[in-house]
Length: 126
Image 1 (spheres, one colour):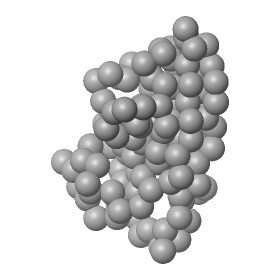
Image 2: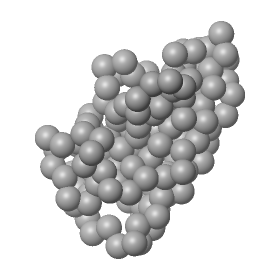
Image 3: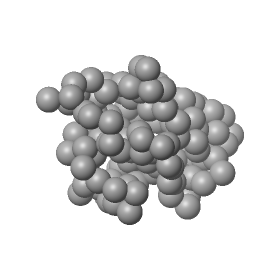
Image 4: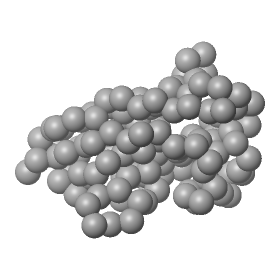
C-alpha cells in the first residue's frame, strides 16, 4: 500500500511564494509518476504538474508554466511544488498523487493516478 503525506500549504499574498511537499511511502517501484493537482471551490480537479521518478521528466499546465516548478528528492521519495508569483486564481486545495503504471504520455491524466494525498489548502489573497 502506498501512502502520500502532504505539507506546506497556507495563506500568502499575491506575488508571494509557497513550497508544497509530498512524501511517499510503501512499495512504489522505481518507474512511477508523481503529480500535483488542484481543486478550487465549485470547479473540477485539474492537473498542475507531474514528474517521472525514473529520468526526472516533468510536465506542467500552461496556467502555471514559468511560475511553478516540480522537483523530487530521490532519497526521501519526496516531490516538491515550488510556487512563485502566486495569483488569487491559484487558490485551491492542492493534492499530491502517484501513478504506479503510467507513461510520459499519461502524466497529465487524472484518471491514471491510483493514490492520493489528503490535500493541502493554498489561499492567495489579493
